[in-house]
Length: 158
Image 1 (cartoon, rainbow, N blue to C red):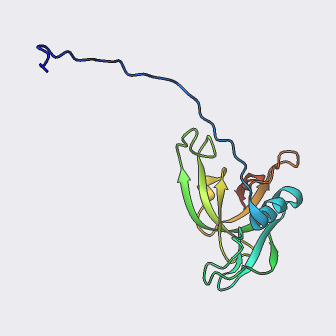
Image 2 (image 1 turned 30 degrees about the horizontal axis):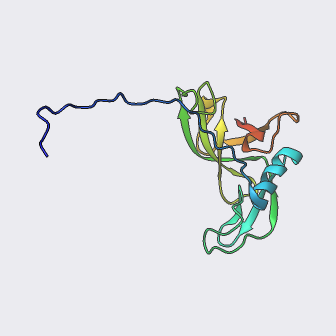
Image 3 (image 1 turned 30 degrees about the vertical axis):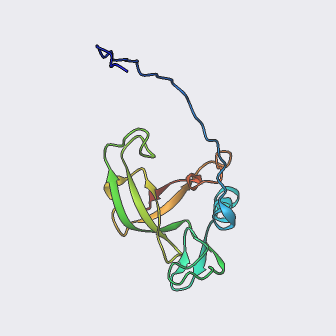
């Protein structure tokens, strides 16, 4: 066999196809987080759970992070508490932050709880500091959906 005298290169344009692929899913919260969220939605009540070595944990994970044992009694805590950490966001980014105007991420140790939960403060940022007393601001009854946003935010108490 003889070799061809000239090599020709075959060039093909890349193929492109725009496709939208969706993976619809349902997220189940499970019995512990489900009960916590139902308390927010249906009762305007924040619940914690006693966990070995941790006291009353809010929100409850359902187990002790110290020894892995199953958490115990459910405990109703107040919707007031003390700020244990503050991070002010002066220029919120759309699609990233939960608020469109300046706000603060806070950790709040609610009265009756031994751990702090994360949330936001939207107003009186100039008065906000570690040690500030705050209170939950609840979403309207017809707007609560069983999410952490059933607490719209926390407000600084005078």
